Structures are given as structure tokens and as C-alpha cells.
Length: 111
Image (tube, rainbow, N blue to C red; front, side):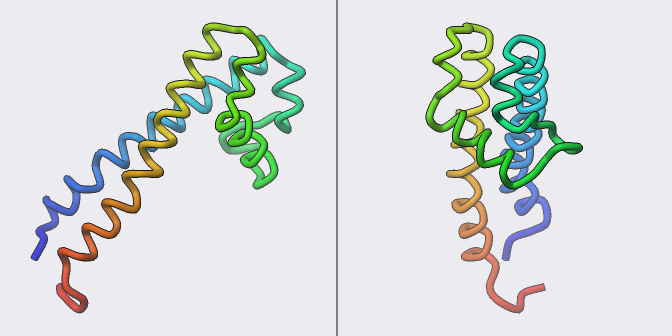
């Protein structure tokens, strides 16, 4: 049976990845607003909390996944976006591995 410490250790990398990803999203939203206002508006003027909608999230993910940020020819934005995209993929890979791993190790009904 998996202990609480083992469970926490399994989820900790994913939690850290998620927090850093969210911080980078805030940095990127701010950077886009200051330096590429038309693009920021085109993404629905996204923010982490106040203007966070499914539509804005989908526009932002499309912007990241299709690497539309590279069209802006801004090296700083490209660095921020590349790091954000990498953390997105790390979370996308880690979550199912950790979730399935924890449920395979802990038998159903175990306390």
C-alpha cells in the first residue's frame, strides 16, 4: 500500500509544473498586453482569473500549440512561450502516468 508521503512525492512534480506553468501564463499575458496588444486582444484579452473563459483558453492553447507566437518575431516572447509550451506537455504526460500509477498501486477500498 502506498503511504501518504509516497502519494505526495508522486504528485509533487506535477504540482510544481502546474504552478510554474500558471506563473508563465501570467508573464506571457502581461508581455503580450504590453508589447503585442493586437495579439493579446485577438486572444480575447486573457488573464489568469478575471477574463478566463473556455474560449480564451482555447485561443491561447491554439496560439501555443500551433506556435503562432513565432510569427511575431519577438525573441523574448518566443522564450517565454517555448517554456510555457514545454511545461504544458510535461503536465499532459505526467498527469495520466501519476494518476494511473497511484490507482494501480493503491488497491480499491484501501484506507
